[in-house]
Length: 284
Image (cartoon, rainbow, N blue to C red; front, side):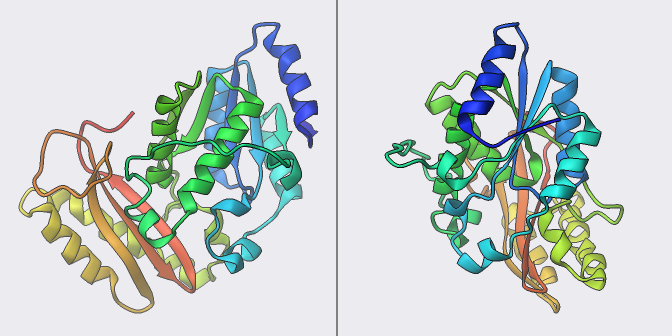
C-alpha cells in the first residue's frame, strides 16, 4: 500500500491509473480506524479497480477545541489495518495540503439540513464537513464515494452537496457496523472504559424499541418516551428524533416514505450517535 502525503503525488498517481481506465473507490476518514471503516474498504474494493482511503482530522468541523485535541490519532495501527484489507493508497495530507492559502470556500445552500439534530448542537460542524469532503473529492476525483449510515445526517448533507453541485461521483452508503452487543462502531468508542462500552449497548437497545412502538404510537410520542428512557445515569441524551430520510425534518404521522430515528447521547464525557431506519423503503 502506498502512503502519499501531497496533493501533487496523489493526483499524479491517480492520473496515471485513470488513463488506463481504472475506476476509483474513495473512503474518507479521520483515522482511528475500526471494522466499520474496513467494511467500507471491502465494498470499495469489490466495486472498483482501485481503492483510496484518506486520513485527515479536519479542524474546521470541530466546534470544541478540546474534542479536536482528544481525537485519537493512530496512524501506525491504521496503516496496518488498511494494508491488510488490501487498500491501494492511503492519502495522509497535512492541513496545509487540504487548506492552502487562497483556497476558495465552496458555497452550497444546505436547505436547513445542517440546522437540525447534530447541527443544532454543533454549530458550524456541517459547514466544515462540506468544505473538507468537497476538497477531498476535488483532489481524488473518485468514481464512487463510500460513507457509513451511522453518520446519517452527514451523508444526507453530502448527497445534497453532490446533487447541488452536479459532482461526477456516486455516493454509496453502507450499513452501520455494530459491536456484538449492538453499539455502533465509532472511533470515539475507544475512549470509553470497559464498563462504559458495555453500558453503551443500552443506546441501541432503546432505539430498537421504536421498531415495534411505531405500530401503536405516534412518532412524537415515541421520541418522548425513548428520550425519557435514555435520560438516566450514566447517560445524558441530547435528542431523540424521528425524521424524514431526505429532509431530516421531524415527522408527525407515519407514511410510506423512508424515515429514521436518530439520537446523540453523552456517556463518560463522550458523545455517541446512532440511528435506525424504521421504514421498509430504506434510503439507498
